[in-house]
Image 1 (cartoon, rainbow, N blue to C red):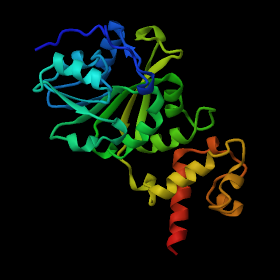
Image 2 (image 1 turned 120 degrees about the vertical axis):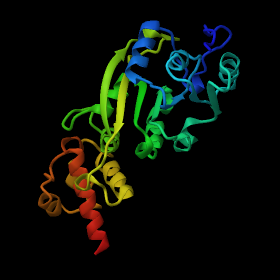
Image 3 (image 1 turned 90 degrees about the vertical axis):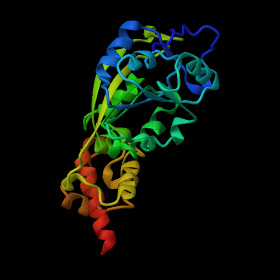
Length: 270
């Protein structure tokens, strides 16, 4: 069964939910091709909105899960798609247990993420990374640029380190403002996130300590690591790890942060 298209009439995009609805058929088709849903996949869409991606996804798979907070949009989706095709989970994606939907097949999470909660939502999704096959999201281009940034660039930051530890990430393509209604003031981009199978050499021994070290390092970007990490480690010990004490947070790689945090974890045990 194919639902009738929803042109959005009667629904006013809500700023508090960060709503910008995708309306370009060409971009929609390109996104679904990148996601590549197949029979047997468990696909979860975050923030289906007016169903722009929901409908073409359902043309390729028998069943889809969506997580939506807006009751008006939930009612529209329930009217368009029968429950045997579409499971609607009402609530906040920031609190949703995505792991509960893991079935025998690959788990794929997709969505046009609300700009106002994109970073906290990405951090929430990290806890489900071991269960997920891949994720494809549309976000502000500047956020995607930070996610995939290389050490040494101005975009490389806490978000880069924390996400690159868990995922291989790739910016797929840019989506212009005109593809949306209402049109945002910035470009968007599609990012592909594939969870890493973390080897022992790049495994954090204390994830909480790792997160604290990264947060401290980037807390004052213009300062040197010997200053931002003073509460954790001495200048001499930094140098002994092969990390230049006068370097700034964006100058060292994800593996260096793992090494540093693991060294601190070892010291704390003795």
